[in-house]
Image (cartoon, rainbow, N blue to C red; front, side):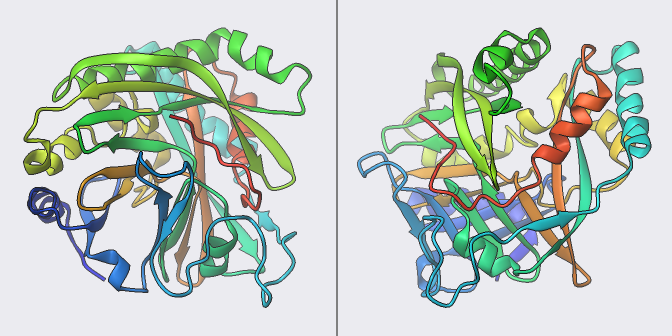
Length: 351
């Protein structure tokens, strides 16, 4: 397993892409550490799954390693029942409100307009990280044994062989059981402002390298199974066209967009500082990115829906966007809603 300085990973990405060499990579949120695996299909330790390239059926998953099952949400013959649950021990409402208030005070000072506040929740689970990976259904999955598992519904960027680049920011979550949930989330002014801010940021970041950047679809609904519940997640599709030499510059293209705008906020740099003060601990690989290059095309994900292992204990990372219109109790509940195991056949990504 090749963990190293993130800057080294950036250089390796560009060199491999230019030569047409397949690779798997990951970069942490703080841009301090990265993981790079050349020819990942030839190893079986780090397991991964991403959607197939654009000329293949949608949501057919690539996996590495002889034990890597496709993410169908079904159990194998030796697996435990698929009703496996996790038992969270969330921080108290008062502790969350303190973090929320730190962000709100920064909003009043004009230091941020949108900040994606995240928390770490201790959990208990009857199955381990590898079995979670095997069972989980998600467009993007990554398992690093002994460190973390990620089952993400959110794309970072996809780059087709012709240089078309696309991203699918996700902002806005509601329980599907809420009466008329789709209308409620789409007509919520706070959610609209939050989503618009993320789309504007990502459109601007894509435009650094790409031409003809366009929002092709704005605020459509993804349905995501969250354990025994279904969540509606609001997404958009933004596309552009990279220059012909994009492979030689792939590392720079990716890193110029990090940390991910949908998991930081607006304006980006000052919001990062606000979040450091509010969260009080590093995120590590949570809300970082990982991706797979098959020799011609790249697909990558934001590392949300994330469980990490530290000193034998498990922690689930989750969060949500805070604006001036946010209500702390509602945001606290959204953070808890996102603690789940996605053992279902539904996939939450479009585009």
